[in-house]
Amino acid sequence: MQNATLHQLKVFEAVARHSSFTRAAEELFLTQPTVSMQVKQLSKTVGMPLFEQVGKKLFLTSAGKELYATCQDVFQRMTEFEIAIADLKGLKQGTLRLAVVTTAKYVIPRILGPFCQRYPGIDISLTVTNHQHVLDSLSSNRDDLYILSQLPDESDAKVYPFLENPLVVLAPCNHPLAKEKDIPLIRMAEEPFIMREPGSGTRKAVQKLFDQHGLPLKVKLDLGSNEAIKQAIAGGMGLSVLSKHTLALEGLNNQLIILDVEGFPIERYWYVVHPSGKQLSAIARAFFDYLLNEGKRVAEETSYQRLLEH
Ligand code: PGA
Image (tube, rainbow, N blue to C red; front, side, top):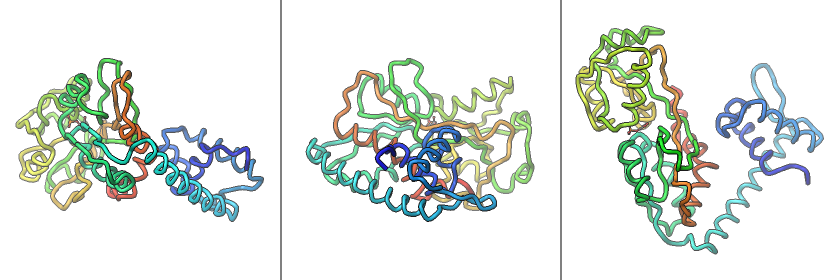
């Protein structure tokens, strides 16, 4: 095993956990051939196959099961090591300042939970605001890290994707289009629409899609809150486009439905961002690494992804 790399073990662990090359590739932001290649090289190093395909399902072989258990031990020890180093680096106390766009509030607090357990002495200052305000904080260097779904225009920032953030069309359950499939985008132009306020990233993404197709939107109402928009949709005031994550806590709850509209979901990501010249504090660096390495898994484990798949 001297020739196996930590990266290969990470890739293998993700495939084993998901029982899927595709999902592991998504989680790690790698292509599927890259993931397959890493696993192939690892099984060559081990000298035995690690997975077997039975029908459409992927199973661990006996060697794969041994390696999976070993990976869990190795990663557990690594985490303990990181905590020990964190103590040495002065991660015992201090504040982590985060500014996140409104839709990220459905995910970031959950991701923060295990991080705070790992570093119990750290305090968090979490500002939840819209895209434009997060950009303002970024340019005035007010916080340690920023979470955005739309890349800042000026390139003087480092951006790293860590989780999908699809935008979907929401309607009340009793809407006439509720059961339709492949609804043409043009049909949306006939519906009253509820939009997020100017400055919102969600609004920008929706506007961009309709502009690209030369379609006007009948905006009946601007609202500065995702929760208020959900209430307005349920109350029959119109349709809207929101992040699928806004449904994560209570699901569709028999009040709202996701319409199957051409061009949707709008595929987007959340990015963690900092100014390129910024020296991250030890705490900010620790959270940054944690977000990129474990954020997606923690979000899934806290049931977001499972909920979102329904
Ligand atoms: P918003 O940003 O809260 O400004 O709409 C969210 C997003 O861009 O996804």
